[in-house]
Length: 248
Image (cartoon, rainbow, N blue to C red; front, side, top):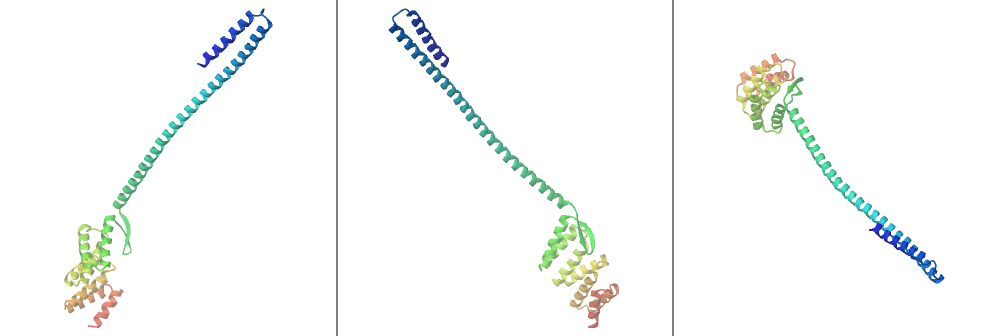
């Protein structure tokens, strides 16, 4: 459209030039009028060309602005997609970390752990440790009936446990504290028989003697105290046994 307009103006100027040439032999006034008109047309041509060029520049600039706006919209759309993907990656990463942490926790629960029991290092499973800790917590809280049940169940579930000696000893103690002396005697005698070298064995015999005394089996109590003194002479329990025998 711009090119066509420029061509039309040029043709008009060319036509006027031909008319001016044709009238070269007319009077001077007509000649001046033609020359003046020609000058005006040339000026008009320049003005029109200038206007068209400016419009073309503006059109080009508008096109660039439109392209820029479109590009910015595309960038914004892509940025939104990137943010969504980043969020999804963060969520997936957190889930993966949580999964690994849970798996690690579960695996650790299955792995044996090293513990020290009566001065000796032993290996126990986490579930085994949890069961023992729960039973002992009941004992410490004075819930001897619940502790008795838990300790008995532990002995059945983990017969070869490194805690077997402790479980048997505390079972006898829990029974004694409930004043179930017959059961306490049986439990503590079994403990001493199966774990004679355990540091708690002398105290277990003191419990047996105390129960026998409560059951009015005084002779049996004296016999137990003498066995204690003989088997474990250099212990605090042996000194206590001597004191009790001296008072009888």
